[in-house]
Length: 147
Image 1 (cartoon, one colour):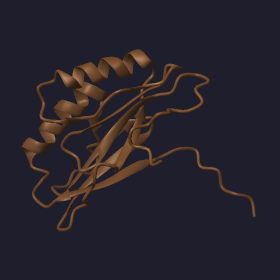
Image 2 (cartoon, one colour; image 1 turned 90 degrees about the horizontal axis):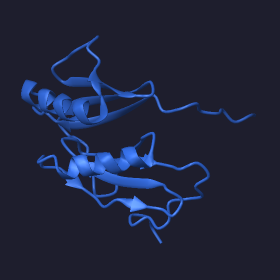
Image 3 (cartoon, helix red, strand yellow; image 1 turned 180 degrees about the horizontal axis):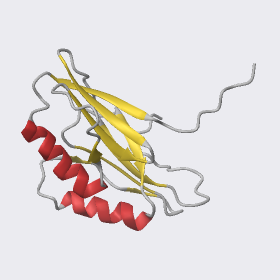
Image 4 (tube, one colour; image 1 turned 180 degrees about the vertical axis):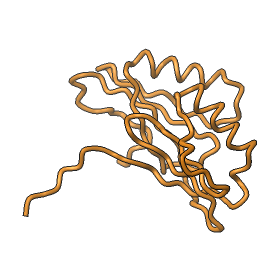
């Protein structure tokens, strides 16, 4: 049997505690992620316990309230790519000076021009912003990688 070849990620499902998805939380989420990353709400099926957001590249994030929501450590994350090292650097500076109460990790820079950093805001999962320069072999050293 031939292996099925995936063509990309379609969505990410994230749970948050019941009562999180208030109008104020949704507004804060869209104000932040919309201005920083261009994310927009998909409004075709709004529900009080579900919030669906277009995150680029044909992907979306489903955020749902659950009585038992996901719990994340400092490792769980998802990654998104940006178009250039300059974009990654500018976003890192923007987030660092945003005045928003977010968790911002260190920028990792490779000799080949690759950039990567993580941040967490309003979601249980952290997000990793990445730029892989053409021909980059890897991102060593990765401070979060297991030895």
